Length: 213
Image 1 (cartoon, rainbow, N blue to C red):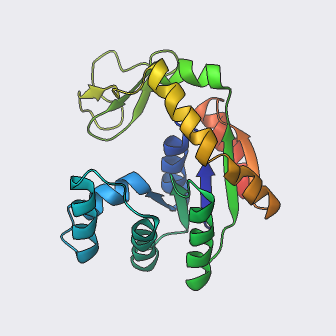
Image 2 (cartoon, one colour):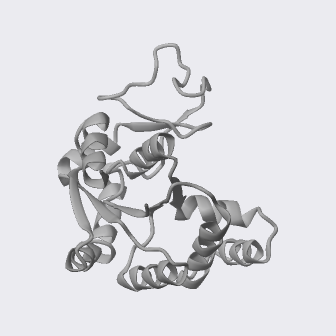
Image 3 (cartoon, rainbow, N blue to C red):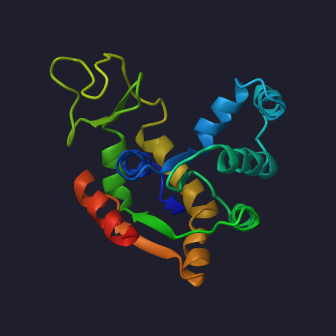
């Protein structure tokens, strides 16, 4: 099973992807993670990525698709979760062609719908474990009282510098301009399913499970 998780920054895509990995044995393909991994891999593709990123340039769609293709061919699991890709219509076309060339397809595109004001409130209260990436929230999931991550026991809690109202609104505008057209694209293909991205983690998980079956 291959799925795409769509939604604005902070909608909870990463959290739900980790749950799907743990419970269904799926593999999360996060563009950011793949680029960081490639940069230090020493492979020919990794050297290209490092050179581009070190020059402060944007990595091309062609390279990202190449990284995804490597993962599709070298990683075992019960399907893939695409998180952070595609972001644009050309990327969606390229991903569709890649999956077809590898004898695969998409089973569902899950859109995590949110209310912008509520999302801003959620994100400005967010922190993560610097060791394992576990997400906490001052309102709904505070950091443990003992100062240690409930997942890995580390005590390195961090807040993203851009998790503030002004930066988040800029990121949301970028999402709506470039990525929201994918909702219509996948709706027309009959792949789109929607869930409430602002529900409690277990409630969102249940909705996604209902979509995937």
